[in-house]
Image 1 (tube, rainbow, N blue to C red):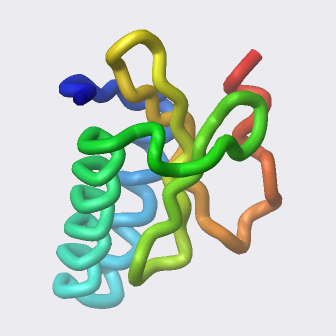
Image 2 (cartoon, rainbow, N blue to C red):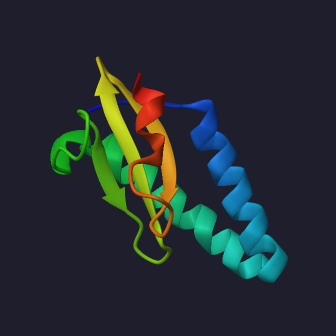
Length: 99
């Protein structure tokens, strides 16, 4: 079982941006978004290989309640979060981060 997680700086910024956006509309929505994020990270840490290969060696976890996907890869025993990508954003915009 993987016990560590690391976020790309850009992924952390995406989380902050989304949380603020939801928070401006509804504090409850912000809390729900962050809870969905926590659930995603916990599920991936529990079984990182559960999700199939996506693009460029990454895997993709689709949020349950929000239009976001968590893009990640595993490096040794560390889950590396590349992006917290809005599903309506240009697909694959985050691929340049893998270079």
